[in-house]
Amino acid sequence: MEHESDFVNFGQVVASGLLGMSAQYASHYFYGLKGCPKLGEDLRFKRGDPDDYHTLMIHHGDAFEFARRVKKHRENEGALLTKRMRRMK
Image (cartoon, rainbow, N blue to C red; front, side):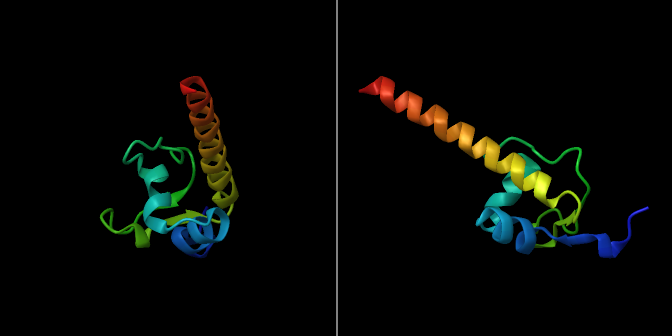
């Protein structure tokens, strides 16, 4: 059973700390907004106010996994963009 203390602030720990992103943009990968895939469906999150990404919490045991997924997606997107640019030359 999870306790409230098992959850950490998504913006501080994951977005800023692990990804170097703002909480707003990193939360797009949680909610699947603005063309970003939804990468946290099977992870433990707590949503405070759905309209306020500052209230999003993630279980401390899932923080690194979520960051790994976002980094992998962004690396893959970068590789695809590089391929497209090479074809345009």
